[in-house]
Image (tube, rainbow, N blue to C red; front, side):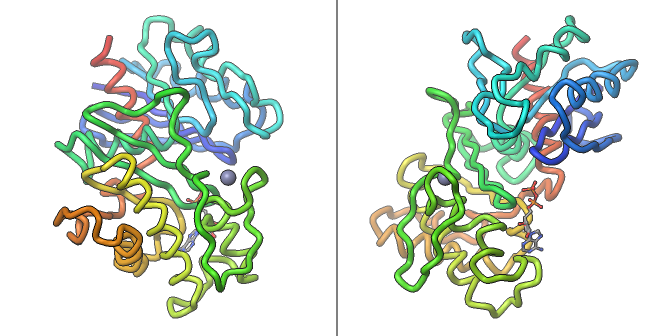
Length: 291
Ligand code: ADP
Ligand code: ZN
């Protein structure tokens, strides 16, 4: 089975072909320019590729509600030209017979881990990417969670640690999760790129404090059976045990589940840096199943 996948990011788009087992066969990448031009590139790429479905995991906020008039739109992004743009319009026009799965990039990545990766067989998981921004997707009781819009867990407010005097980077909330802990916040706070920070730098303990705090909130609200952390910053694998320590510290022993201390409760995506594109493949597979 040949499935099309689009990982739509704010700086670049990746389009690819894969199969129902999550194997990527080929891919291309191009910079995110105007929505018209970028979506046309996707259409041109999929022409003659003989695909049975398309999955599109997109940066947000988006409208993923099929009953809404603006289903398939990017909604309120500050990215020039993209706000209130119907990103699936040209795809639908070019491929009227093909089911199209559309969701946030992180909901897609979460579904990818459920279908093909570390959450295989589970009916509940949460996925975060911690990179240029922070986004979270959730799979709850066997379904991706949307609700009113879709989760925006990267913007939950966090308690700022007393010794951290950084003002926060989010233009909306200053010291939300993303404003305190995404790559650009680390860089601005310490004056050095996250990539270049020494493993013993105090930045990492503070980073784990914020991620652990956010995960404690997520455990209390969504009660996931597994938490997957991807994105550039999570290449720092030494963070994982520190994050788990802080998560449990914030939970204060209130939730008694052995899983919370298991070493495979908080994990790097099994699909690695392919998590985004494989996630879109999962959205394509789901769209085909739903047809
Ligand atoms: P994006 O979020 O734009 O899709 P990434 O997930 O690669 O891209 O995130 C980029 C951010 O991650 C940058 O802020 C960068 O400093 C940080 N980053 C990338 N690689 C590493 C690394 N090995 N260690 C720590 N931070 C990293
Ligand atoms: Zn915010």
